[in-house]
Amino acid sequence: MAARAVGVRAVAWLLLWEVAGFTSIPATAFSAAPTDTGIRATCSEIILRQEVLKDGFHRDLLIKVKFGESLEDLQTCRLLIKQYIPSGLFVDPYELASLRERNITEAVMVSENFNIEAPNYLSKESEVLIYARQDSQCIDCFQAFLPVHYRYHRPHSKDGETVIVVNNPDLLMYCDQAGSRCVIRFSFDCFDKTREFPILKCWAQSEVAAPCALKSKDICQWNNMKYKPVYKNVTLQVPVGLTIHTSLVCSVTLLITILCSTLILVAVFKYGHFSL
Image (cartoon, rainbow, N blue to C red; front, side, top):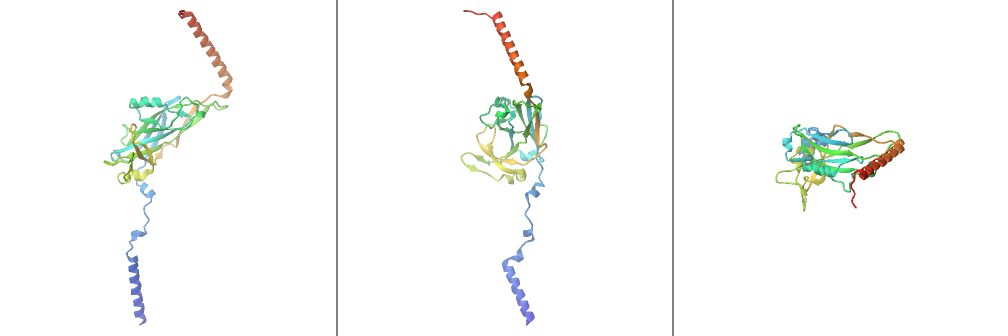
């Protein structure tokens, strides 16, 4: 009788266990979901290299972006570089307009009330949007070009140089799916871009609103991409004057100005023709 009672209890517990659903739990239910680190481990890195070309006070900023996958998978994707210009440098908007007309670069100023004549201590950081182009010498690369110029700096008391640090830019990507776009105009309608473009799933961090193209009034939601920079930043050495030379420089400048003005007046009265 005791054995039969134990058997009945065992069967009852098994029935209750099955009704509760515990016997049908798959083993995968206890496995952890894949993390972002695991997904990104299978993705190719995006490499960004920023360098400054030329010497002197007028330089060219060159930005190259290399993808680890074929650009055939990114034919409908565009790359936008948001470059931050420190107060010690400036970008000439009139020069940019001329370069756009000659199809040399596709860059536009974002900052308003911009004064190219102001010294660095009266200036603020500015922003430039550069629409990158595919590099003809690299099958899976994009590049962007931006001319920059040094501003005037305060003279120093001891060291005759100052340092300008150009930080790495924001890298934005927008991928357009055939027959579907993500545009802000009169309404907001987006598609899940990560399903068609794995690179966005790997490295997209957030979304940023920016013009879809250089001459477009449409605003697209660009993906702010995570990348690996070759250099932490770019450092420029700028020569500046010394305060101990202030009296000498002012005196020489004044004397030269008086001398040149005198020579001009003499030439005017000597060779000029005056009619009353």
